[in-house]
Figure 1: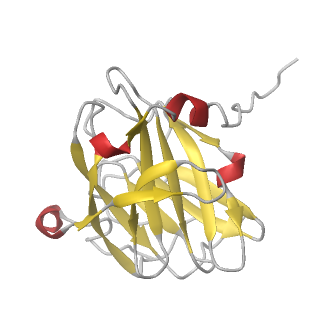
Figure 2 (figure 1 turned 180 degrees about the horizontal axis):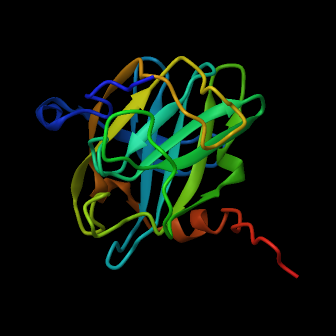
Length: 210
């Protein structure tokens, strides 16, 4: 199914973007600048105190129900580094996506990695939460915000419909049921505790290790 052209918002959405606010996850204790939608969707980011040369951030994303939640680290959908996540029973499935056209975005290749933070990733009776270190995610090619920016606009999209293959991180997804953009104060997203939080993340899996 084709996704609507305004997935993750368009240029005109910049002037009417919602605003993120401080949010502390009750389980991990990590403090984010986060946007919360009336559906229960939320997107938060945390950054190191000194952003110079940094390419990592911590992301929390979640929602209610069995549908998917998405984020654009540059604002619009096209030519941006995207994150999609959804619950699958008691686990969370997630992947990076990237596309230069409108439609269900494919999984890209790149150096970026998702390193889950276990004490910030969970499902319960009211919602689900996925928290991870987005390693090597801040790019200099315009696919994300820049490390030295003080403010930025991130895109969001969500759907109440579950992906076609809930256990497959590369599954196609249906058209969003809501989308837009939110303004983030990146100065307020910076924290002296970032290194500690980052160390909670799981190490990447190494294939064929001996």
